[in-house]
Image 1 (cartoon, rainbow, N blue to C red):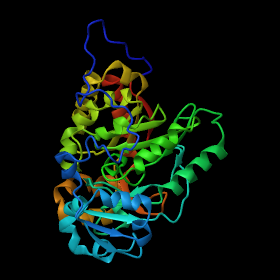
Image 2: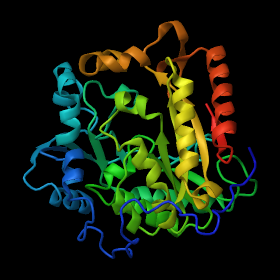
Image 3: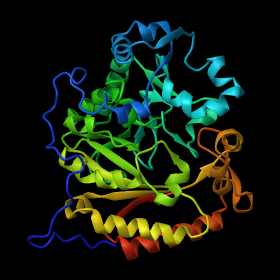
Image 4: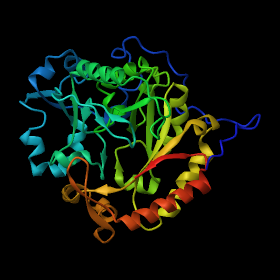
Length: 393
């Protein structure tokens, strides 16, 4: 498992850049020169027609910038981004689950700024600059608190979020002992409840957070993503932001990863992001147990080994996360995507679990989980021995 990958033999081709253009110079005003954001592909992901917004969010500089990017959207002012009865409390929205994600945006002001310890994927969970997502992964944990709709909520007080994280990093001082999160830097997850790549289609919050960590030599930002947004290649992270491309076998992704970039595109983007200055890791997540799961994971890992260039393999690491599900989400999914529940909801193999935030979820039983993690790590040793596992959960 610890064998480093070898460099390609002389004349052996490295992986070609996915998008076919050189990495652009950082734009001094990324709000004025979009590369990808205004393309038809981006608009298929997020084509905002309706905005629910707290008045203070609308009146902020970031709120005004976001609104300039969604011209013609109908605006409804709300007292709280958390309490929008026509969205969160309306069970009639289940049948419109995906359409709401595509066409609806919520703007709010994040009131509580708190950095929480983590110790798994990151040392710390930073205050999120968003909540919710335009993608529709059937297993996503974020909708469990929102009821019947889960569009993107963007927080417009980004200056306060950035200042909070900067103070937290500086108060910690240098990291004195290596751990599985990173040997040298404090790692801050900046996208716990959303996808920073999708957020960047309408907001510069992601750009501001990447710029923050570029100036913090003792810390790194980190976010997981299932969406390839080439606009991020221009943000000049200088090695201070870790992108974790979430992967699962394409057979699972076609059923469960709704509205995401195809798995092959996420893998193909790895070299582009590394060359643009990101650290690139992978999330093997979630691992869903169903017939032929071992065969399909072996195929995915073999594909990684075949197509990733040596420079990506040398710095890569992975997280393995077994599926955790939730009864409330199960009921929502039955209303819009029942086929997903045929593999996600397996009561005979699952047991209840109280999560860190107090929610009651279901996960694979401890013995099934232990055996499955052991088998997946054996597959890694066989098909991708260069891929170091940072943690498995």
